[in-house]
Image 1 (cartoon, helix red, strand yellow):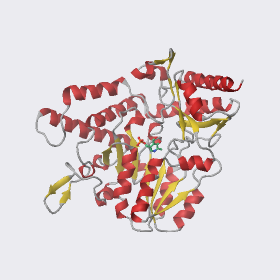
Image 2: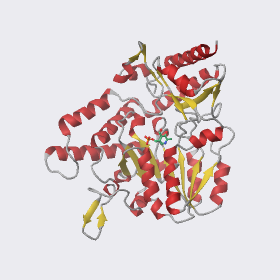
Image 3: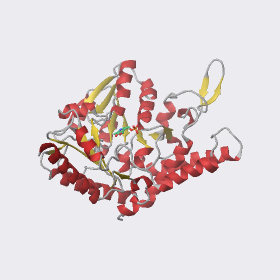
Image 4: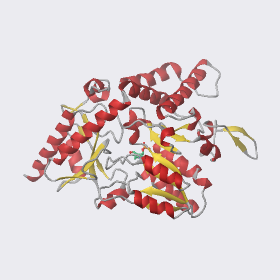
Length: 409
Ligand SMILES: Cc1ncc(COP(=O)(O)O)c(C=O)c1O
């Protein structure tokens, strides 16, 4: 099944925007995607006709909002292949999902228990574990990368042999190198060592279908805003038996069965992990985005973005003085490509391009340890979505050529 990126493009109001008279080439999708009309309409309808607080009220809107919120949970569960809807916890974003695991699963760990992270990780999958290390004295082991920037399975094997490993937490797709992680192998090795696995799927979820039961991962985190949904809504998948053993993350209304002056009894899953009024409209908006993706076809999206990022890599490689970070080729390259241009600071380049509506991202992309490992402070990143075209990539490449000329000739 093929998709027509231009037909999709027309469904996104923001993509019709012009900057300095030039059409937008939005190539910053790894940071956040734009939202289709359908998602915007769903959320508008929610606030205009269905808004009420969930679980508590008995009036028609409270009831309707509760049904919509729980139906959104079922949509997410189906999308990810979860066995039960109550294994889906709504959070604010992937960051909060990972923090939930670090706080709550982390509470079950003891001094010197070990968590393994890779050098590829986004700060969201580093800092919560450093905080846990400060709090409980857990040890952190770093899984190395091979010469091309791929996760080194031998390094993981050595770390797992040391024992005391309780959790391996890795990104499913690097937000800098655009290289997908060999998840199946890592999950099998981790389980064979008796440890649990958390997948940070913040990037992978936009480019590949994910089935948590087939993968047999223990936890998986992502954000709605990177898959055409709204900001403010994220997902944590966790296996029922693990979530049941974990203490609540935040305390407050809705997460308890009963409370008295001496203590409280937490509610059943998933409410135990959803204290306070959740992002109801955003959950409904996320379900709408997932339905939209299903109609476009996840496989078609995968094929299109994979082909397009391959095209972008080739086009960038043809520019003199451009160095692409990470592997030169491979079937595991998805979503984004990062590069440096000799003599131009990534921030300057990105600003020059932005002035003509070409939206890229510059900096360390919240992956300072990876940039340190690569020996550079920053890079420029181009990242694609289902609505992007080769013509937009060509415009970007021509603009980079012009920018270099402007600065050097
Ligand atoms: C790999 C990865 N993990 C985690 C995150 C954090 O996502 P959020 O800021 O939506 O929580 C990002 C965001 O770019 C990411 O790329």
